[in-house]
Image 1 (cartoon, rainbow, N blue to C red):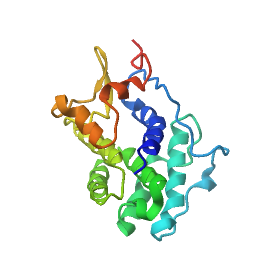
Image 2: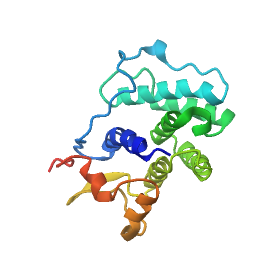
Image 3: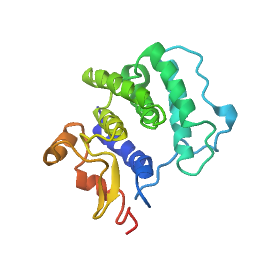
Image 4: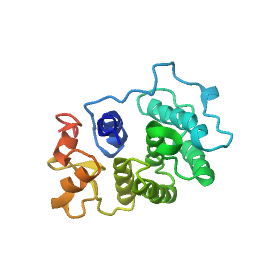
Length: 211
């Protein structure tokens, strides 16, 4: 796994994606779209007619680009729910799209769609277990699993493992809901290739809570 590439990709995705959890969030980085092309129209909605392996990669990358367009003020030609439904169909036919099937960028795209499938928490929970199996096979990114696992736990109002989902507390950023064994959180984060919790908070800028 290329940890440098993984951290660079997550550096532009994470503050944007978690901004929905913050009051007055102003992340330090602005997430770019997947390409510099003009905003897609409805005709650009990814066309997946079945098929596994590399046949999934193009549609997954297009869905991830649409996801980011909608979160950076662009025109998103589809909804999170449409992407969730399409990813569910892909997984039902092909299993979780791992490195062997769609490359690292395709696997990242599948994770991003699952991470934003908050309207279907049962699907998110299923995705966690499928992704976990691929991580154990070294066929998916451990940090992606960490973010999705925390997302599901936070949605259930249960303590997180890695502290990736954040909110604003009296003293600034803090893990949403709370943490399991907080003294060991940085060690757990390091095991999956994530920076320390303090470094993660710093990536949101000097005053992400607008205090």
